[in-house]
Image 1: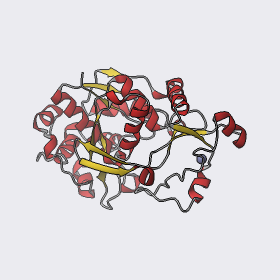
Image 2: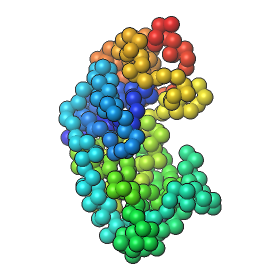
Image 3: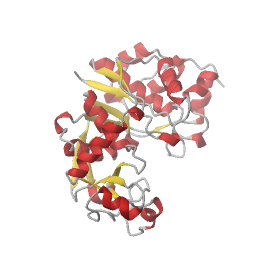
Image 4: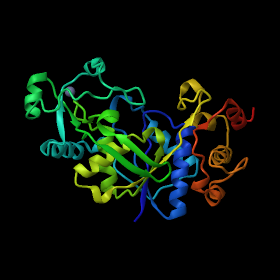
Length: 313
Ligand SMILES: [Zn+2]
């Protein structure tokens, strides 16, 4: 059965950009009869904010969203992810890496990806026979890195259309298991999505370069028959063109709720971002009027006027 997932990460409160993505994801699922899973992505231990998981669920319900099932929290699935990383080590698709963050940053000859993050220069590739050897060399637990082939990668995004990546130069080898034994995002979502039978992934286009990484993981883990379709929506940005963040003022859903903003009003703003000309709208009308083809392909700009309109000031 076609399945999608709402996957909030409790590293911070949901803001208007998250709200847009979750609402569009939910509407598309309800329009097309997809099953909806809720999954709390709480892997990022130290960055998890206490109570943020409950707040996220509460915000989603306030918007009117519901779901058909809940999957396990990622923090309870360390063994499953560890076993997958082990499989990839055994098949030589992944390797132990003992580099520190600063060593990677200092590898100045490394090309740089779009987002400014250094592409890993491959220092540890082929260096150690196994984890034990890397552990002995470093005196601590190594990370596990997935090796990217020197190839171009093409895929069809359902929303953005055709995209091409140079795997080795633009993305580079990436961590799938950290030195502390927790799985990295890329590995965890692939395992979880494959296991839950997720067929359609809708998310912001800041995650578009995760797609080649995730597709390669599906293939390397023998899960190619479960590859989902990807829909990357344009990011919601501030007037400076940067992704919504604290510098744009408080755009958390909870901030507006505390100011007495009604869900219909927030949904009205989200609807306008989807090409529906309304003031306020309820979720049912939004679902009836929504057409993914009308969603603008350009980045959506959240302005101070939008903020004043929401709060009625
Ligand atoms: Zn390394």
